[in-house]
Image 1 (tube, rainbow, N blue to C red):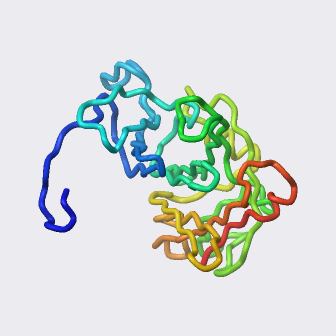
Image 2 (image 1 turned 30 degrees about the horizontal axis):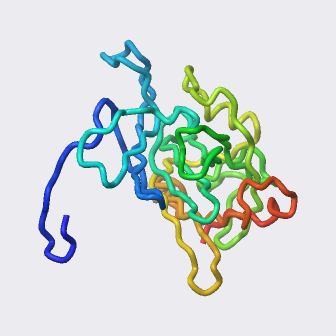
Image 3 (image 1 turned 180 degrees about the vertical axis):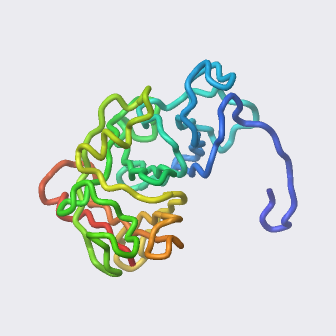
Length: 235
């Protein structure tokens, strides 16, 4: 699409063999992550393979790419991804009423297919909390409050029983209501990064929330000092 003339230049297929692909997101190295928002198993509803994964498509692709699932990034109801160009960390939303916020730390930068660690966000002082902030709920989140967070490793990330979010919750992960879009913003003045997260059904009237996650300078470095620099805020 030519953004100056506002005209379509060409169009072509780039990915097939996937189901219920949702928002996804771009990478800093010139590709797009397409996300399946479904967890169908092979043999169910005519599916020939398990679904519920991410797939990477080069932005410059002019023909179909092989639909190779990025299994290490987890099998769940994927919605969107956002990549922090400074650290290479990939954040993922799960569009469910009790979904988690995930972080993927790739073993090799710019090579998501090489595997890595999948983690879920924990609010340090409120393990297992729901962030829905519904009227009358305990542990509601005030606008502007900063909450220190940590990340817990997840096991069996291909989740054959569709229970990855339950596993995370058992380790203290926070739940979000209908997490969908994400975006990375870097403040031009301070250089601080914010990962914006849209929770479409959160808030007192279930009309939505906009969260800001501020990552550490060395995201995933594992030091205690860096852990203190990670915050979640409801602006």
